[in-house]
Image 1 (cartoon, helix red, strand yellow):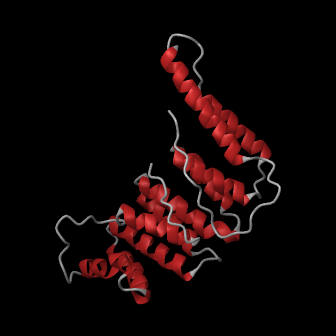
Image 2 (cartoon, rainbow, N blue to C red; image 1 turned 45 degrees about the vertical axis):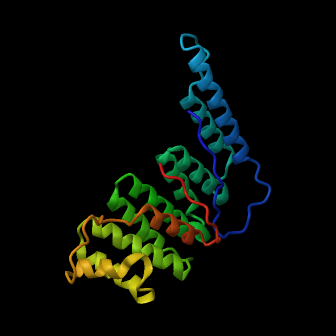
Amino acid sequence: MVYARRPREQPNAPPSVDRSFDIAASLDAIENLDATGGMAAASFAETDSQVDVEEVFAAFKEGVAKQVSVDDAQSHYDLGVAYKEMGLLEDAIREFEIAARDEQRECVCRSMVGMIQMERGKIAEAVDAFQKGLAAPVKSSEQEMVLCFDIGAGYETLNRTKEALSFFQRVALRDPKYRGVSDRIDQLSGRTAPKKGAVVGAGSEDDLDKAFDDMLGDGSNKKRSVN
């Protein structure tokens, strides 16, 4: 199994200085080892030459724990993004939770956790993460609108109509055309019937991709990975 690498988006925060643990280089080494292990497994299935990928990751994470300070929010954010891309969602959540201790990054990190929980189908946990992001002391008005919409979508999926309407209305006050929020309000209010084939929940994948780019606030058009 070979993991595709993609550029890592960064929140607007001062860069770290003299990072002793090179996350990117370490991840490249793991992926190269993983690729080698995969070839070895295919060629020598009956030998002991296969690489145990789980052991490799366990060793890597042990090295991270020893060498990356809990105060190094940048490194933990990078790790969270990397783990998410690799499908290691529990590890990704843990790293984002650590990075969220930095007030400058908390809003983005909580949103990342919420997106992961939505992908896992854990809607209540996703709403809780989005709520924490909304309560973060440092956030932009755009980030606040994104989170309000995502919270509303979560509540809609949970059939908690009153709460969903409340958050969608907060979005509509700022931008009634944002991600079809006015139509959602109409549907939930009973003024119009849901369109045939409409999916109730947290919006389309394109919506979430745009929300992710907006949340990072760096003007990037890079798409996040879907696991």
